[in-house]
Length: 213
Image (tube, rainbow, N blue to C red; front, top):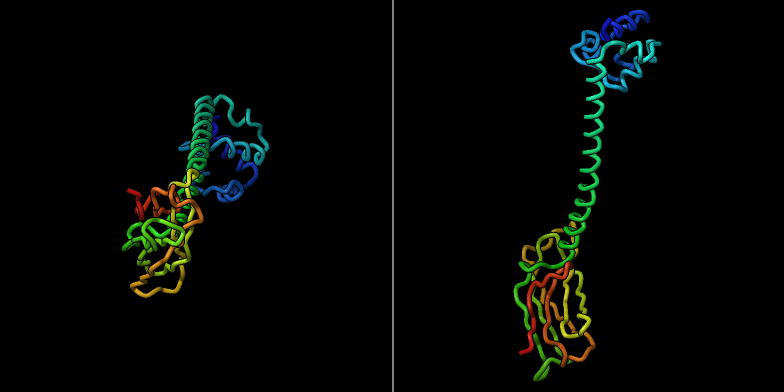
């Protein structure tokens, strides 16, 4: 007796319909029909459930059906391989999307190159000093507003970096959101400063504001 016949006999011994068995295993009625007619075979998990339901041991259900055992074994291996592949892809995909999302968030927080119209320096003297100012003209996109700036230096104190911040808002800004920003320089020895740069959140230079010649 083949496995399909044993499955059908087990169901009929319990006076159950194919639909009733299908509801227990959470498959469709045609799936039960295909199993009983050996057009396809149940997976290992379904075999275990059917074994308990029909009160037949796995050995009885699969007896002498070596092809079925081999088919189920191969399908189980393929299923495990697919699950492992999905797990690996998820382990790669989740950190990657998190990184890209964080990078995109950083990019949105800082004013980028296309928003900068003009940059200049007001020295307030014949050379760079504590009273010097960096002037930056920007045009912000709709739904963004200017939220401030941040100034820091390299460890050697020879380069000053300026970051401009913008903030997303639900209120649509005027079509031309033109702003002129005066940036005060940090309290360091200006004689050592060789360059003043406008950078974004990732540290990439947008424009050079000042270079000592």
